[in-house]
Image (cartoon, rainbow, N blue to C red; front, side, top):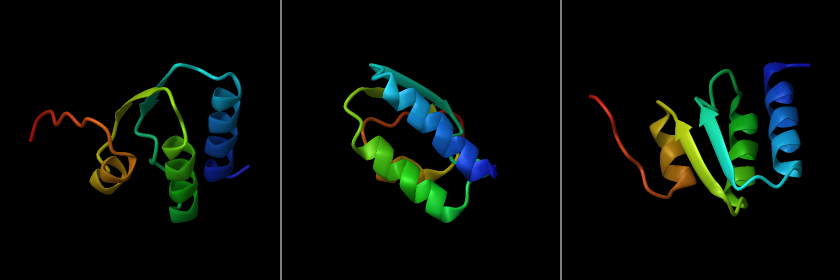
Amino acid sequence: LSGGQKARFQLITMLANDPQLLVLDEPTNHLDLPSIEELEMALGGYSGAILYVSHDSYFCEKIGGEVVLVGG
């Protein structure tokens, strides 16, 4: 499986358990653009809380919610 396919499988597995909180560390790392777009759509329809760390400012804007910037 490619990196994007593995990431999609992991996300599907996580969401299938209907968690109340997702903790994601750099979720867009090593993903191609179509995979990032799929991730954004999946997280956009998620009703629980999401705590994530990302250096991808575009991704942060797309996901929305409350954003806390740390460091420079």
